Length: 475
Image (cartoon, rainbow, N blue to C red; front, side, top):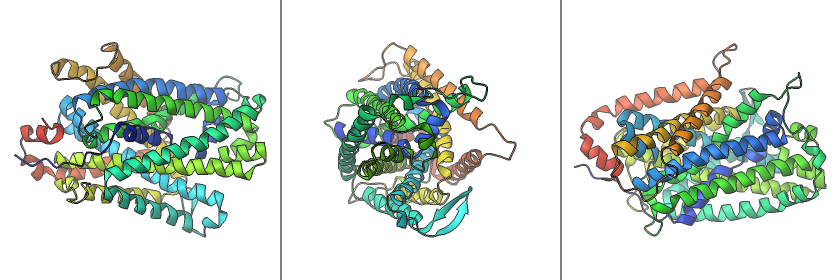
């Protein structure tokens, strides 16, 4: 039987919580707040995130049941393999790898954006233009440089990754509490108007609201970094308690998102927020005339960038590791460093593709969000309905945690995922000016995956399905 490559097991429940929450929050709230308020208004945006969190919470309960059944690295790869077989397992893992590798690029672009706003000299000269936006030398250098540093950190040990995540999360929450309190406590309630976005006719713009709702899958999806790391869970972190980590991190993230939406909207008039390059920072500076408060917002944004970036690296590389261990990708992706217990080739591949996507510049941020939301919705749809399937096909398998309300929970989560998938695809249905960039990236990634699938065919066929079940599920 083929040997089962194993990673080190050093992540406790606190580290898992920090990975989940830190990945969810990220930096989107500081870079695209203006788009949220423009699409749905202040209360409309808060409502969209609340609905999105409700759907994601149901999905997270399904993940908690699956992770308690199969506490192995790769999360959805293992679950889909047991539910549907090798091909769907590969599709799920490959789509999720796109999501997390794209997130690496999102953070690389964002850190240059935030730092250059804090110190304009860091922008540097324009070196090229892509997708209608300028890419500057120092912003690009900073993004790629930090990408390299975090990749090196990933090589060292998962324990160091977990400790870094805990420290960054504490800093993020502390800084955020200060300026959110200032915005809500001293802002102007009249600035919350318009509460919802309206079309030119005066009717509520439901299409814009639906578009924002569909993207909440991207803004909350970081919780599923935890299932990717279950193979590195320490022995004192019981799998049956994972639902507390997932639901707790989603609930805290919802509280954060709603608070920052309301605080930002109250801090300054809508026109100032929508015209600003970084709306949250500009709103607080305008409201309080304080460069210090503006820089505090920016510092929290930097913490959010690093927490998401760090966790996205972990998730993407563990997905690639799991796909390689199952021989869905070349088995070299499962190669583990003998000293540090980390997947070397998976880390290099994720850093390389993330770096290439970073070259697309700031206008790629919206593209990344849309592609990720669509791919996540498809994976969530497959996984949640699969929970109901496993209740029949693996009824006797031990479940340290089981979703409440029977099959109602996975079916409701699946229906919610399907609706978000439809909305996400519908929002990208305008081909009047050619294929949207999102579809081009999505198609190119699927073609690359097909190429890997074919290249690894000879290796894959050398392993029996019973051996593969052992490699993927450790059973």
